[in-house]
Image (tube, rainbow, N blue to C red; front, top):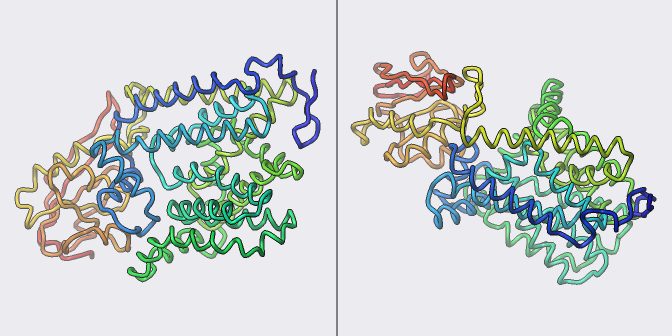
Length: 498
């Protein structure tokens, strides 16, 4: 066996000349990337928009400087793609597919620089694309997805500053951090990670340099739409995110374990521990600056959201930047260990990849038998039918409108009601983005309430109406299993919540 030093100590591995993918030979990577991207393009137009997807498409259809729950970059991206390609599922998802391809390429070439092995870099890229949740995030645009384009360039810019403390390098970093701030509020974690890294490296000269000031100014200008919008709206977005992230003051152990379990399943049970092994090795690689900096980024991200999950359940995609970096790193490092760990990686990637391909086939062809109301399509299927049926009952748009009682139904109802010019209200007791979008007041109108199997609501008990009349109830089926049951109920002369 040949022996090679990666900056983390000596690691046994075959000589480079015996590798089927020699250093610098990236043909197999490009074949893989083209194939997986083509597969996603073949699938993305064949299933309906999910809760968050529809919400962000509405961002693009109602452009603004910023929004209640997120900064504007995701909406601006949707606005660009839907204006070029039309308002449809394919156009809405196309940016996520392209970002997925670009992020995979960035990870591959980052690994190539770290390990000087095309074979290890390829396996890292394949492992990333075998992880279940990344196949969703590489097809469904989220604010997190946009950060995938920025995290490695931000680390690269920081390393350039460490080598060459110039205004130019600082301004590049400022631009990248500003764009990250336009994508998601938790991009502030990048700044925290950079400060910790420079402190641990004892680069006080970089922490105190006046050359940082232009970078701060550039970043401030880029994120200024968020600040202006919040000034105009009483800082509601910052207040919402603060409460959303901090959760309740008391410790919630159930939320913590639910958050961990969700990540365990979402990223693949066999790839989940690989990421933490990669983090462990990265944090020990102090002499390998690129990998050590990645370890600091990963640690800050995973600690922040793990702490948050002690108070409120953390959604699995919130930690996706950690797994984006460290599923590939852990995969590459384990492939340099014993035969047992090589076989483990081959199995983990193979198993996860096969399951992923099965899920792709199900999204496209809908052939798997599933229990009633537990279909993987329950959030994606049937809203075009629902809104078409609702529109058939609304004969006087000036005095009638559709309504839902939960925010998770509202984005899809509004999006799929657009072809029928159906005005839709969200009727609940919380403030959110829908309050800013809704034109006019629902009081005094006849509201056709749409309720579903998972979001039942007794209109008689919860709404003040002159009369309540159920007008339709129907099942949404795929094959022989029920995906959803929908009820349409009139609330005549709606006067508010009970």
